[in-house]
Image 1 (cartoon, rainbow, N blue to C red):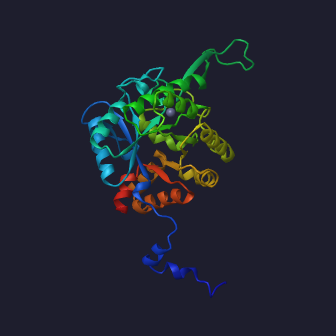
Image 2: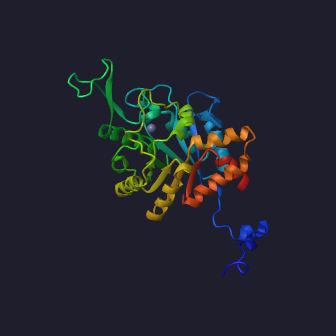
Image 3: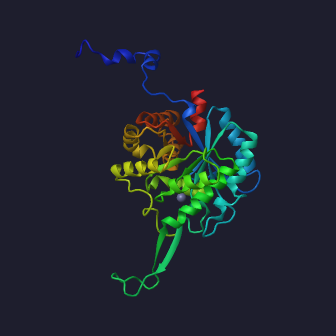
Length: 340
Ligand SMILES: [Zn+2]
């Protein structure tokens, strides 16, 4: 039936009709709110490039967790800013690590909030890379002549796995409900699964950052987590933004290794990857609306160039429509307030 029998505008005439036929809905139950925990007490320091996002000491993180939960947001994901960094990421896996402290405090005060632990080493490494770094002086006979001071470095995959597993066990013992590895080393889901199982933590699920792209949209996060690499970049382990098929291989590998949930990161520049993953895999699918996506909206809204609330909701609905069941977003609390 064509026009004039068919008139698509009939169902758009008012909000009641539009709501009746709406295909995609947002609810606070779909949100995960990221928190950045730092040492100290009474600290609530706004991240320069992420207005509305704070570095929080443990006591403040507890307050934030309580508020998040009261808004109907079921989960938070925790990132840590350790007092000290070193070459083996001690702060990531030590029993009194900053996230471990926060987890124990939040579990005590807000027991029904789901706590997701981001597992990566970059925030705890003095060099800011996500794995162990091996530095080798350029050999004299190198085919390409290098400047004398140049050294080459490598992010060592297999040696990193042990630290990731150790970190995961430590977090789960502290009370983390879901382990979320974000480092993009090969084989880390299997290593973490083994580590958890051997520690008697076989009920702890893994949410794998399965397709994580080397994205410039992470810029503001590195302010928030103080995790910018001191040299080089992350392109030898995070994915090339041009590759959709490779993303499917990454996800398939993590599913094979025992991931319980999968994630695509970032979200809005990779909606096609989310849609393809939804089509192909039957695991719960998360998407991370990253710091740069948030910062762009906040900055444009601060200039009165866009309607903040509408753009925020439209960005979230686009991620949901693409197929994500969970959205990790800095807008979780604000969007939940609008939806409640
Ligand atoms: Zn990392």
